[in-house]
Image 1 (cartoon, one colour):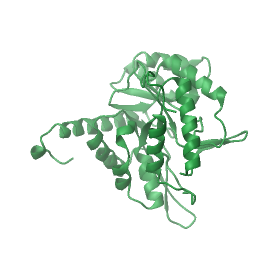
Image 2 (cartoon, helix red, strand yellow):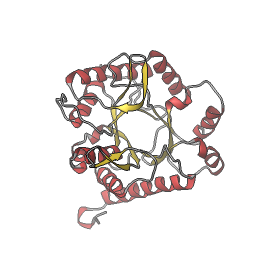
Image 3 (cartoon, helix red, strand yellow):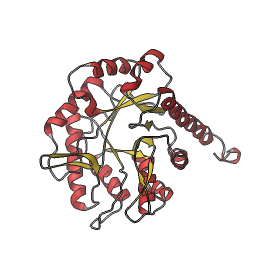
Image 4 (tube, helix red, strand yellow):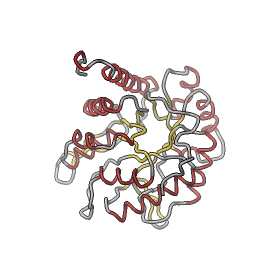
Length: 301
């Protein structure tokens, strides 16, 4: 079931088509004191599901000055079990409390029976999984009274039983439920490298008209059991040059979209993280200028 026609797809804190960063406790004071020129902040919803305390005091202060996006990591949209109603209720309360401009989750599962795994595990791209994920997305959107965005995963294995491509699966989910998509460019690059296909071809086929947000992050290099290169979506370093290039390729088609710099592990100084956001903003502005330039005078980026 699609979200009701009278349901707002955004709430008052609209997210601008600029760069934002994931909000980290280590940066609270610098942000509140300096009030940097940055478009928005994103937080992991599960970190703020308590009733009060210092995290909420800081978040409320920052929310007064900046738009906010909520990014969930624990709904387990792809799980072969019902959604956790208590978790969903807390998520609804958090949305009502902060009125974020965007809410997003992952195409993944992390629960089985009574167990919760500290990983975002892949979903087979089958009709059965499509129906299950669609039902869960409908439930989330109806409970929250708003649209959610679903993020493409970084994957390290594929399923033999998959009957459609990832692009087809995501497109069908958006069509069935009315959800939007969150395009993680680094995830696309990681998956393409691990499975031996072209990230450019993947992104050229991606339903960009459904994308409401972009994520950029860093990845680590490892080796698989056969000694082949394996990329890990580590979120512990700067965005790699090939990912910046793919980002430019995407926004040349979409124009400005809210773009998040993810850096969740080995969190750097505020200035380092802010610098990554400034790089994204410069590319957005440069692409905007190129799109508004007559074709005969356009300079290749």
